[in-house]
Length: 349
Image (cartoon, rainbow, N blue to C red):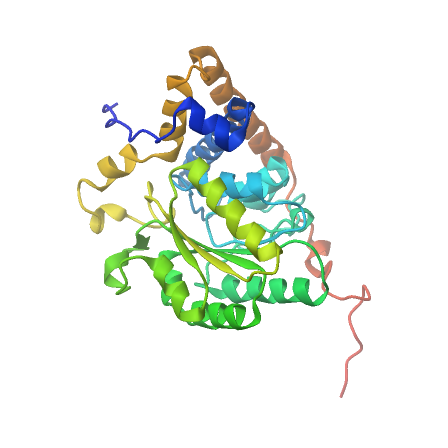
């Protein structure tokens, strides 16, 4: 196995962590680390299963774990999530059971969608997590609608929309940010800029130097954040959510990170990425950066590191086994949840 390049250290000393997170900083960062390792194991196992034909399409989130985990740790139950295609870990951190997610990937009879949703597009009603979306940008206006409803009802919470750099060129980005800016909707727009819209590099599809600058045209404060630094993610999201929930209007956050896998299980990035892309990406690997910080401060001894990885692997394997042992959806389930009354309406001439 080739040796990995040196990791870019996170810029925090012990005093910084105690100031940001209090005396329990190690527990909070270890919680984040456990979730990020689970996400990494999940991606590795699911891509393997997809190649074996045991599941269908899969969109990995390797390299984006800090954003999903950070958001999961700072949001509250009253918040709503309108995800893109790589925020599955966010649903799990918010409380969606891992076995339920695996049942969805296998589209079995215990899948909450009973096999009727697209592969790798789960929804999690119990944690206010809408269906993941492959349609570019549509979740942006969905989040704005939810935020507007929260404001009209004087309900607590805010909406968060997650989308990639390519979605900032979509019609829904313009419509969503324009409406949110005018009406001061409690929504946080989270652009996960992994620098590729499938095979299109970000500099070829947007003229601005920083995507966060696009918020200015809609009267929305924008901020660029290191999306490979889970502490920076948590801090920026906490501030943005506080502003949104307090009636101070929407915020746009651009999380800059590196896509560390193919766009999906159907993509071959070697056809369009530079030969040194993965070397640069590995130096900014969010899991390795947090791991390096914890090890340097003595908070992640080898035995604990090994147990975290073993626990994640065991949890994923157990969920896979449960999903593969479940039967396929019954034919009768085809019309379940279709008619509000439980039966088809009468035919009309």
